[in-house]
Length: 156
Image (cartoon, rainbow, N blue to C red; front, side, top):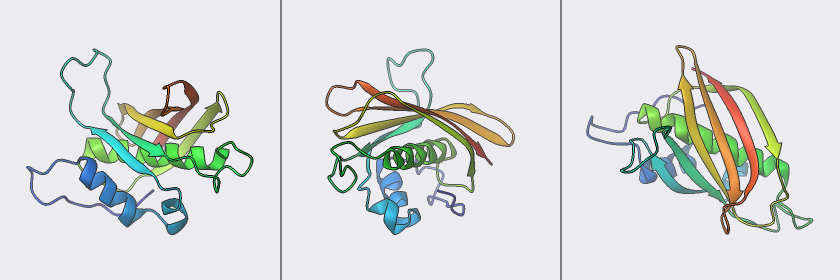
């Protein structure tokens, strides 16, 4: 989801759920919008009571649909697209808006079939001078059991 840089308006504006949802509509191609991705959470600042290893990020929902699961299981391509989109929103969260970035590496491990809504919880692990690294946990929206994990690197 590489798009041109955007400014939110004023320094007081914070990249949150509304801005992330708007970005999904404005930046995603039509075939990605057909996935029906929903922004569940955007965490730019450390929430109260967060563990010491907390990292900024974003959580999106990939709703289950028969169109994406002709055999009853969400297709792997939809899961990877959701993970990539969640990571792009996590990047936008730390930048307080979208910047030009391009995925240079993404590795996904499928842990179990997904026949349910999936949550993609993307977190920024490290921000380097030219590269940003992240991880995405894919889990059931019903019982939070993991169904996949992704590691990503984006060139800035």
